[in-house]
View (spheres, rainbow, N blue to C red):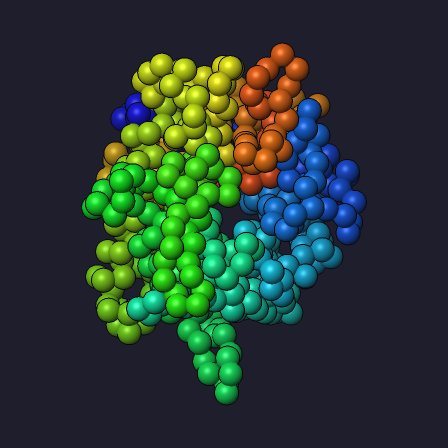
Length: 454
Protein backbone atom coordinates (compact mmCIF):
# COMPACT_ATOMS: atom_id res chain seq x y z
CA UNK A 1 0.00 0.00 0.00
CA UNK A 2 1.03 3.63 -0.39
CA UNK A 3 3.54 4.64 2.27
CA UNK A 4 2.65 8.29 2.72
CA UNK A 5 5.19 10.84 3.82
CA UNK A 6 3.44 12.68 6.69
CA UNK A 7 5.86 15.63 6.49
CA UNK A 8 5.33 16.36 2.79
CA UNK A 9 3.79 19.76 2.03
CA UNK A 10 2.75 21.28 -1.33
CA UNK A 11 5.66 23.73 -1.22
CA UNK A 12 8.10 20.82 -1.03
CA UNK A 13 7.06 19.79 -4.54
CA UNK A 14 7.65 23.20 -6.15
CA UNK A 15 11.19 22.37 -7.38
CA UNK A 16 9.87 19.24 -9.12
CA UNK A 17 6.94 21.21 -10.52
CA UNK A 18 9.24 23.90 -11.89
CA UNK A 19 11.26 21.18 -13.61
CA UNK A 20 8.05 19.69 -15.02
CA UNK A 21 6.94 22.97 -16.62
CA UNK A 22 10.41 23.44 -18.11
CA UNK A 23 10.23 19.97 -19.66
CA UNK A 24 6.62 20.48 -20.72
CA UNK A 25 7.06 23.61 -22.86
CA UNK A 26 9.10 22.19 -25.78
CA UNK A 27 6.93 19.06 -25.88
CA UNK A 28 3.74 21.10 -26.37
CA UNK A 29 5.37 23.01 -29.20
CA UNK A 30 6.72 19.85 -30.81
CA UNK A 31 3.31 18.15 -30.76
CA UNK A 32 1.66 21.23 -32.25
CA UNK A 33 4.25 21.37 -35.03
CA UNK A 34 3.56 17.74 -35.96
CA UNK A 35 -0.24 17.78 -35.65
CA UNK A 36 -2.08 17.86 -38.97
CA UNK A 37 -5.44 19.74 -38.84
CA UNK A 38 -8.36 17.49 -39.68
CA UNK A 39 -6.39 14.29 -39.06
CA UNK A 40 -6.70 11.99 -36.07
CA UNK A 41 -5.74 13.47 -32.70
CA UNK A 42 -2.52 12.61 -30.80
CA UNK A 43 -3.33 9.89 -28.27
CA UNK A 44 -0.20 8.00 -27.14
CA UNK A 45 3.47 7.77 -28.01
CA UNK A 46 5.36 5.09 -29.91
CA UNK A 47 9.13 5.34 -29.47
CA UNK A 48 8.65 8.84 -28.09
CA UNK A 49 6.51 10.20 -30.92
CA UNK A 50 2.83 11.00 -30.43
CA UNK A 51 0.63 8.90 -32.69
CA UNK A 52 -3.11 8.80 -33.33
CA UNK A 53 -5.72 6.11 -32.95
CA UNK A 54 -8.61 7.84 -34.71
CA UNK A 55 -11.22 6.25 -32.45
CA UNK A 56 -13.33 8.96 -30.85
CA UNK A 57 -10.83 11.85 -30.65
CA UNK A 58 -11.44 12.08 -26.90
CA UNK A 59 -7.96 13.50 -26.28
CA UNK A 60 -8.01 16.62 -28.47
CA UNK A 61 -9.05 18.87 -25.60
CA UNK A 62 -6.06 17.63 -23.62
CA UNK A 63 -3.72 18.67 -26.43
CA UNK A 64 -4.82 22.31 -26.40
CA UNK A 65 -5.76 22.35 -22.72
CA UNK A 66 -2.14 21.50 -21.94
CA UNK A 67 -1.01 24.70 -23.63
CA UNK A 68 -3.52 26.72 -21.61
CA UNK A 69 -2.32 25.15 -18.35
CA UNK A 70 1.28 25.87 -19.36
CA UNK A 71 0.41 29.57 -19.66
CA UNK A 72 -1.49 29.51 -16.39
CA UNK A 73 1.47 28.05 -14.52
CA UNK A 74 4.29 30.00 -16.18
CA UNK A 75 2.78 33.15 -17.67
CA UNK A 76 4.33 32.42 -21.08
CA UNK A 77 1.97 34.21 -23.49
CA UNK A 78 2.77 32.07 -26.53
CA UNK A 79 1.05 29.11 -24.89
CA UNK A 80 -2.07 31.16 -24.21
CA UNK A 81 -2.23 32.17 -27.86
CA UNK A 82 -1.60 28.60 -28.97
CA UNK A 83 -4.32 27.16 -26.75
CA UNK A 84 -6.79 29.92 -27.56
CA UNK A 85 -6.28 29.75 -31.33
CA UNK A 86 -6.37 25.96 -31.54
CA UNK A 87 -9.55 25.89 -29.44
CA UNK A 88 -11.20 28.42 -31.72
CA UNK A 89 -10.03 26.72 -34.93
CA UNK A 90 -10.44 23.03 -34.11
CA UNK A 91 -12.73 22.32 -31.16
CA UNK A 92 -16.18 23.44 -32.37
CA UNK A 93 -17.31 19.98 -33.49
CA UNK A 94 -16.65 18.59 -30.03
CA UNK A 95 -19.30 20.88 -28.55
CA UNK A 96 -22.14 19.19 -30.47
CA UNK A 97 -20.61 15.71 -30.73
CA UNK A 98 -23.54 13.40 -29.99
CA UNK A 99 -21.50 10.20 -30.23
CA UNK A 100 -19.31 10.35 -27.12
CA UNK A 101 -19.43 10.67 -23.34
CA UNK A 102 -16.23 12.74 -23.21
CA UNK A 103 -17.50 16.33 -23.27
CA UNK A 104 -15.95 17.21 -19.94
CA UNK A 105 -12.56 16.01 -21.13
CA UNK A 106 -12.55 17.89 -24.42
CA UNK A 107 -14.45 21.07 -23.71
CA UNK A 108 -13.91 21.95 -20.06
CA UNK A 109 -10.18 21.43 -20.65
CA UNK A 110 -10.25 24.08 -23.40
CA UNK A 111 -13.22 26.46 -23.33
CA UNK A 112 -13.51 25.97 -19.57
CA UNK A 113 -9.89 26.77 -18.81
CA UNK A 114 -9.98 29.83 -21.06
CA UNK A 115 -13.11 31.14 -19.37
CA UNK A 116 -11.59 30.43 -15.95
CA UNK A 117 -8.53 32.51 -16.80
CA UNK A 118 -10.79 35.39 -17.81
CA UNK A 119 -12.86 35.09 -14.62
CA UNK A 120 -9.64 35.04 -12.58
CA UNK A 121 -8.34 38.12 -14.39
CA UNK A 122 -5.30 36.32 -15.83
CA UNK A 123 -6.38 37.29 -19.34
CA UNK A 124 -8.09 40.54 -20.23
CA UNK A 125 -11.86 40.65 -20.16
CA UNK A 126 -13.58 40.66 -23.52
CA UNK A 127 -17.38 40.42 -23.48
CA UNK A 128 -17.70 38.78 -26.89
CA UNK A 129 -14.96 36.25 -26.13
CA UNK A 130 -16.52 35.45 -22.77
CA UNK A 131 -19.92 34.94 -24.38
CA UNK A 132 -18.29 32.57 -26.89
CA UNK A 133 -16.76 30.42 -24.14
CA UNK A 134 -19.94 30.42 -22.07
CA UNK A 135 -22.10 29.42 -25.02
CA UNK A 136 -19.73 26.54 -25.82
CA UNK A 137 -19.86 25.34 -22.22
CA UNK A 138 -23.64 25.66 -21.99
CA UNK A 139 -24.07 23.58 -25.15
CA UNK A 140 -21.56 20.87 -24.32
CA UNK A 141 -23.24 20.06 -21.00
CA UNK A 142 -26.66 19.77 -22.60
CA UNK A 143 -25.41 17.62 -25.48
CA UNK A 144 -23.68 15.24 -23.07
CA UNK A 145 -26.77 15.06 -20.86
CA UNK A 146 -28.88 14.05 -23.87
CA UNK A 147 -27.01 10.71 -24.05
CA UNK A 148 -29.42 9.30 -21.51
CA UNK A 149 -30.59 5.80 -20.58
CA UNK A 150 -33.21 5.44 -17.83
CA UNK A 151 -32.83 2.66 -15.26
CA UNK A 152 -35.38 0.58 -13.41
CA UNK A 153 -36.64 2.32 -10.28
CA UNK A 154 -35.88 5.82 -11.55
CA UNK A 155 -32.81 7.75 -12.51
CA UNK A 156 -30.44 6.84 -15.28
CA UNK A 157 -26.99 7.43 -16.73
CA UNK A 158 -25.06 9.06 -19.54
CA UNK A 159 -24.23 6.16 -21.80
CA UNK A 160 -20.81 5.48 -23.29
CA UNK A 161 -19.82 5.30 -26.94
CA UNK A 162 -20.51 1.55 -26.72
CA UNK A 163 -24.22 2.30 -26.79
CA UNK A 164 -27.27 2.88 -24.56
CA UNK A 165 -26.63 -0.31 -22.55
CA UNK A 166 -23.22 0.86 -21.34
CA UNK A 167 -22.15 3.01 -18.39
CA UNK A 168 -18.42 3.79 -18.09
CA UNK A 169 -16.73 4.68 -14.81
CA UNK A 170 -14.78 7.32 -16.80
CA UNK A 171 -17.83 9.53 -17.22
CA UNK A 172 -17.90 10.60 -13.56
CA UNK A 173 -14.97 12.89 -14.40
CA UNK A 174 -16.68 14.15 -17.54
CA UNK A 175 -19.62 15.35 -15.43
CA UNK A 176 -17.60 18.56 -15.32
CA UNK A 177 -19.47 19.54 -18.48
CA UNK A 178 -22.90 19.24 -16.86
CA UNK A 179 -21.75 21.01 -13.71
CA UNK A 180 -20.40 24.04 -15.53
CA UNK A 181 -23.36 24.22 -17.91
CA UNK A 182 -25.79 24.10 -14.96
CA UNK A 183 -23.86 26.77 -13.10
CA UNK A 184 -24.12 28.98 -16.16
CA UNK A 185 -27.90 28.68 -15.91
CA UNK A 186 -28.45 26.27 -18.79
CA UNK A 187 -30.90 23.36 -19.17
CA UNK A 188 -31.51 20.60 -21.71
CA UNK A 189 -34.71 21.19 -23.66
CA UNK A 190 -36.78 18.08 -24.44
CA UNK A 191 -40.06 17.23 -26.16
CA UNK A 192 -42.88 19.75 -25.67
CA UNK A 193 -40.31 22.22 -24.36
CA UNK A 194 -39.65 20.09 -21.29
CA UNK A 195 -36.86 21.69 -19.25
CA UNK A 196 -34.51 18.94 -18.11
CA UNK A 197 -32.25 19.88 -15.21
CA UNK A 198 -28.55 19.24 -15.81
CA UNK A 199 -28.05 19.10 -12.06
CA UNK A 200 -30.65 16.32 -11.88
CA UNK A 201 -28.92 14.35 -14.62
CA UNK A 202 -25.53 14.87 -12.97
CA UNK A 203 -26.77 13.59 -9.61
CA UNK A 204 -28.65 10.68 -11.16
CA UNK A 205 -25.64 9.61 -13.23
CA UNK A 206 -23.39 9.87 -10.17
CA UNK A 207 -25.84 7.75 -8.16
CA UNK A 208 -26.12 5.06 -10.84
CA UNK A 209 -22.32 4.96 -11.07
CA UNK A 210 -22.01 4.76 -7.29
CA UNK A 211 -24.64 2.02 -7.08
CA UNK A 212 -23.31 -0.22 -9.86
CA UNK A 213 -19.70 0.67 -10.77
CA UNK A 214 -18.36 1.05 -7.24
CA UNK A 215 -18.40 -1.81 -4.74
CA UNK A 216 -18.66 -1.45 -0.98
CA UNK A 217 -18.01 -4.88 0.54
CA UNK A 218 -21.70 -5.30 1.31
CA UNK A 219 -22.15 -8.75 -0.25
CA UNK A 220 -23.31 -7.70 -3.70
CA UNK A 221 -21.44 -10.57 -5.36
CA UNK A 222 -18.57 -12.97 -4.73
CA UNK A 223 -16.04 -10.29 -5.76
CA UNK A 224 -17.52 -7.44 -3.73
CA UNK A 225 -14.41 -5.83 -2.24
CA UNK A 226 -14.89 -2.36 -0.82
CA UNK A 227 -13.67 0.27 -3.26
CA UNK A 228 -13.29 -2.04 -6.22
CA UNK A 229 -14.47 -0.44 -9.47
CA UNK A 230 -15.96 -2.03 -12.58
CA UNK A 231 -14.96 -0.13 -15.69
CA UNK A 232 -18.27 -0.78 -17.46
CA UNK A 233 -21.75 -1.54 -16.13
CA UNK A 234 -24.22 -3.24 -18.50
CA UNK A 235 -27.98 -2.63 -18.43
CA UNK A 236 -30.93 -4.16 -20.24
CA UNK A 237 -32.32 -1.26 -22.24
CA UNK A 238 -35.72 -2.93 -22.58
CA UNK A 239 -36.54 -2.71 -18.89
CA UNK A 240 -33.70 -0.66 -17.39
CA UNK A 241 -32.41 -3.44 -15.16
CA UNK A 242 -28.74 -3.90 -14.35
CA UNK A 243 -27.25 -7.05 -15.86
CA UNK A 244 -23.53 -7.36 -15.12
CA UNK A 245 -20.13 -5.70 -14.78
CA UNK A 246 -17.82 -5.57 -17.76
CA UNK A 247 -14.42 -4.13 -18.67
CA UNK A 248 -13.31 -2.62 -21.95
CA UNK A 249 -9.72 -1.93 -21.01
CA UNK A 250 -9.14 -3.91 -17.84
CA UNK A 251 -8.29 -7.57 -17.38
CA UNK A 252 -11.79 -8.73 -16.46
CA UNK A 253 -15.17 -7.53 -15.16
CA UNK A 254 -14.20 -8.83 -11.73
CA UNK A 255 -10.86 -7.06 -11.38
CA UNK A 256 -10.12 -3.35 -11.14
CA UNK A 257 -8.62 -1.54 -14.10
CA UNK A 258 -6.69 1.17 -12.34
CA UNK A 259 -7.43 4.02 -14.73
CA UNK A 260 -11.16 3.35 -14.31
CA UNK A 261 -10.54 3.43 -10.56
CA UNK A 262 -8.60 6.68 -10.93
CA UNK A 263 -11.49 8.39 -12.72
CA UNK A 264 -13.71 7.54 -9.74
CA UNK A 265 -11.03 8.66 -7.26
CA UNK A 266 -10.76 12.02 -9.01
CA UNK A 267 -14.37 12.52 -10.10
CA UNK A 268 -16.34 12.26 -6.88
CA UNK A 269 -14.10 14.52 -4.72
CA UNK A 270 -14.08 17.35 -7.23
CA UNK A 271 -17.85 17.08 -7.65
CA UNK A 272 -18.17 17.30 -3.86
CA UNK A 273 -16.23 20.57 -4.01
CA UNK A 274 -18.61 21.85 -6.68
CA UNK A 275 -21.74 20.75 -4.79
CA UNK A 276 -20.52 22.78 -1.81
CA UNK A 277 -20.87 25.93 -3.95
CA UNK A 278 -24.59 25.33 -4.61
CA UNK A 279 -27.33 26.79 -2.41
CA UNK A 280 -29.08 24.21 -0.23
CA UNK A 281 -32.35 24.86 -2.04
CA UNK A 282 -30.98 23.50 -5.32
CA UNK A 283 -30.45 20.09 -3.71
CA UNK A 284 -33.79 19.75 -1.90
CA UNK A 285 -35.49 18.10 -4.88
CA UNK A 286 -32.91 15.29 -4.67
CA UNK A 287 -33.32 14.52 -0.98
CA UNK A 288 -31.34 17.46 0.39
CA UNK A 289 -27.68 18.26 0.74
CA UNK A 290 -26.88 15.52 3.27
CA UNK A 291 -28.39 12.76 1.13
CA UNK A 292 -26.64 13.90 -2.05
CA UNK A 293 -23.26 14.58 -0.52
CA UNK A 294 -23.24 11.38 1.54
CA UNK A 295 -23.78 9.33 -1.62
CA UNK A 296 -20.88 11.07 -3.35
CA UNK A 297 -18.71 10.79 -0.25
CA UNK A 298 -19.36 7.07 0.23
CA UNK A 299 -18.13 6.35 -3.29
CA UNK A 300 -15.17 8.72 -2.95
CA UNK A 301 -13.98 7.23 0.35
CA UNK A 302 -14.32 3.64 -0.83
CA UNK A 303 -12.44 4.20 -4.09
CA UNK A 304 -9.70 6.29 -2.47
CA UNK A 305 -9.21 3.72 0.30
CA UNK A 306 -8.97 0.95 -2.30
CA UNK A 307 -6.42 2.94 -4.31
CA UNK A 308 -4.24 3.52 -1.24
CA UNK A 309 -4.44 -0.12 -0.12
CA UNK A 310 -3.94 -1.76 -3.55
CA UNK A 311 -1.13 0.42 -4.92
CA UNK A 312 2.63 0.02 -4.38
CA UNK A 313 4.34 2.15 -1.78
CA UNK A 314 5.28 5.02 -4.12
CA UNK A 315 1.71 5.59 -5.41
CA UNK A 316 2.15 4.16 -8.93
CA UNK A 317 -0.28 1.29 -9.63
CA UNK A 318 0.02 -1.58 -12.04
CA UNK A 319 -2.46 -1.38 -14.92
CA UNK A 320 -5.03 -3.69 -13.27
CA UNK A 321 -5.13 -4.80 -9.63
CA UNK A 322 -6.11 -8.29 -10.77
CA UNK A 323 -3.71 -8.57 -13.71
CA UNK A 324 -2.98 -12.29 -14.16
CA UNK A 325 0.79 -12.23 -13.75
CA UNK A 326 1.13 -9.97 -10.73
CA UNK A 327 1.73 -12.99 -8.52
CA UNK A 328 5.11 -13.46 -10.23
CA UNK A 329 6.21 -10.14 -8.69
CA UNK A 330 5.95 -11.37 -5.11
CA UNK A 331 5.05 -8.78 -2.48
CA UNK A 332 4.64 -6.06 -5.08
CA UNK A 333 2.46 -3.87 -2.84
CA UNK A 334 5.20 -3.66 -0.20
CA UNK A 335 7.73 -1.84 -2.39
CA UNK A 336 7.82 0.83 -5.09
CA UNK A 337 6.33 -0.11 -8.45
CA UNK A 338 8.77 -1.99 -10.68
CA UNK A 339 8.84 -0.36 -14.10
CA UNK A 340 11.16 -2.96 -15.56
CA UNK A 341 9.75 -6.42 -15.01
CA UNK A 342 8.79 -9.35 -17.20
CA UNK A 343 5.15 -9.67 -16.19
CA UNK A 344 2.84 -6.66 -15.88
CA UNK A 345 3.21 -2.95 -16.73
CA UNK A 346 2.66 -0.04 -14.39
CA UNK A 347 0.33 2.82 -15.39
CA UNK A 348 1.58 6.27 -14.46
CA UNK A 349 -1.48 7.94 -16.00
CA UNK A 350 -3.67 6.35 -13.31
CA UNK A 351 -1.42 7.88 -10.67
CA UNK A 352 -1.52 11.33 -12.31
CA UNK A 353 -5.32 11.25 -12.23
CA UNK A 354 -5.76 9.66 -8.81
CA UNK A 355 -3.27 11.89 -6.98
CA UNK A 356 -5.43 14.95 -7.57
CA UNK A 357 -8.52 13.13 -6.30
CA UNK A 358 -6.73 12.03 -3.13
CA UNK A 359 -5.55 15.59 -2.51
CA UNK A 360 -9.02 17.02 -3.09
CA UNK A 361 -10.72 14.49 -0.81
CA UNK A 362 -8.12 15.11 1.87
CA UNK A 363 -8.71 18.84 1.76
CA UNK A 364 -12.49 18.43 1.58
CA UNK A 365 -12.53 16.19 4.67
CA UNK A 366 -9.50 17.83 6.34
CA UNK A 367 -8.10 14.29 6.49
CA UNK A 368 -4.33 14.01 6.24
CA UNK A 369 -4.47 10.33 5.24
CA UNK A 370 -5.82 11.17 1.81
CA UNK A 371 -3.91 14.44 1.41
CA UNK A 372 -0.53 12.89 2.20
CA UNK A 373 -1.21 9.87 -0.02
CA UNK A 374 -2.00 12.26 -2.87
CA UNK A 375 1.11 14.38 -2.31
CA UNK A 376 3.29 11.27 -2.00
CA UNK A 377 1.90 9.91 -5.27
CA UNK A 378 2.38 13.30 -6.92
CA UNK A 379 6.02 13.44 -5.78
CA UNK A 380 6.62 10.16 -7.59
CA UNK A 381 4.73 10.85 -10.80
CA UNK A 382 6.09 14.39 -11.25
CA UNK A 383 9.71 13.29 -10.93
CA UNK A 384 12.11 11.03 -12.80
CA UNK A 385 11.99 8.22 -13.85
CA UNK A 386 8.36 9.11 -14.68
CA UNK A 387 8.97 12.70 -15.73
CA UNK A 388 10.48 12.81 -19.21
CA UNK A 389 13.03 15.60 -19.62
CA UNK A 390 14.34 14.41 -22.99
CA UNK A 391 13.61 16.73 -25.92
CA UNK A 392 13.61 13.62 -28.13
CA UNK A 393 10.48 12.28 -26.41
CA UNK A 394 7.21 14.15 -26.96
CA UNK A 395 5.62 12.60 -23.89
CA UNK A 396 5.80 14.31 -20.50
CA UNK A 397 4.99 11.41 -18.15
CA UNK A 398 6.49 8.04 -19.03
CA UNK A 399 5.19 4.51 -18.45
CA UNK A 400 1.53 5.08 -19.26
CA UNK A 401 -0.74 2.31 -20.56
CA UNK A 402 -3.53 2.79 -23.10
CA UNK A 403 -5.27 -0.48 -23.96
CA UNK A 404 -3.45 -3.56 -22.71
CA UNK A 405 -6.07 -6.14 -23.84
CA UNK A 406 -6.03 -4.80 -27.41
CA UNK A 407 -2.24 -4.76 -27.50
CA UNK A 408 -2.09 -1.11 -28.53
CA UNK A 409 0.83 -0.22 -26.26
CA UNK A 410 4.38 -0.20 -27.57
CA UNK A 411 6.74 -2.85 -26.21
CA UNK A 412 10.36 -1.73 -26.60
CA UNK A 413 13.03 -4.06 -27.86
CA UNK A 414 14.34 -6.28 -25.09
CA UNK A 415 11.21 -5.92 -22.94
CA UNK A 416 8.32 -8.32 -22.47
CA UNK A 417 5.84 -5.63 -21.43
CA UNK A 418 4.94 -2.08 -22.54
CA UNK A 419 6.90 0.72 -20.87
CA UNK A 420 8.58 4.01 -21.64
CA UNK A 421 5.65 5.66 -23.42
CA UNK A 422 3.21 8.47 -22.64
CA UNK A 423 -0.47 9.27 -23.14
CA UNK A 424 -2.21 12.55 -23.78
CA UNK A 425 -4.54 12.08 -20.78
CA UNK A 426 -1.62 11.20 -18.50
CA UNK A 427 0.35 14.26 -19.61
CA UNK A 428 -2.63 16.61 -19.30
CA UNK A 429 -3.60 15.36 -15.86
CA UNK A 430 -0.01 15.56 -14.66
CA UNK A 431 -0.03 19.22 -15.69
CA UNK A 432 -3.37 19.74 -13.95
CA UNK A 433 -1.98 17.98 -10.86
CA UNK A 434 1.10 20.20 -10.91
CA UNK A 435 -1.03 23.35 -11.22
CA UNK A 436 -3.27 22.18 -8.36
CA UNK A 437 -0.30 21.68 -6.02
CA UNK A 438 1.43 24.86 -7.19
CA UNK A 439 -1.66 26.87 -6.31
CA UNK A 440 -2.00 25.12 -2.95
CA UNK A 441 1.57 26.14 -2.15
CA UNK A 442 0.52 29.72 -2.97
CA UNK A 443 -2.67 29.41 -0.83
CA UNK A 444 -4.85 29.56 -3.93
CA UNK A 445 -7.31 27.06 -5.38
CA UNK A 446 -7.60 25.52 -8.81
CA UNK A 447 -10.90 23.89 -9.74
CA UNK A 448 -12.70 22.98 -12.95
CA UNK A 449 -15.61 25.19 -11.92
CA UNK A 450 -13.41 28.24 -11.37
CA UNK A 451 -14.75 29.40 -14.74
CA UNK A 452 -18.14 30.10 -13.14
CA UNK A 453 -18.40 33.18 -10.97
CA UNK A 454 -21.12 33.04 -8.33
